[in-house]
Length: 109
Image (cartoon, rainbow, N blue to C red):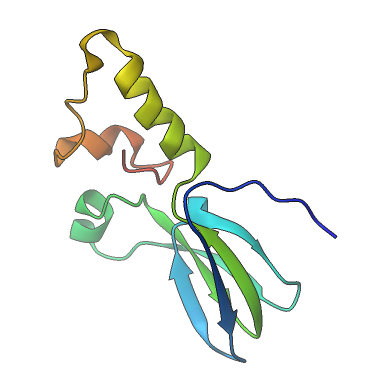
């Protein structure tokens, strides 16, 4: 038995033997012990700079179940804080340059 905390929508995916799935590392909630987990560098300069998902992603290979979240807590917190600032300053959202400061942590926001 395990207790997990997640934000946004929770998606459960059943991976077949040998089936791989690439996902932002911050979106992983959990996976069964039979799933192989690896971290890979995002290939391509354009993907790394403009992808908004950071420099690394997780590769999950089946068989087994994977649970993902659509809104990691770090992304939720940054959105709440942007509204808490005087005047509700949200200048980074929607901007190509808005995610560069968080490029390494994978939030892209």
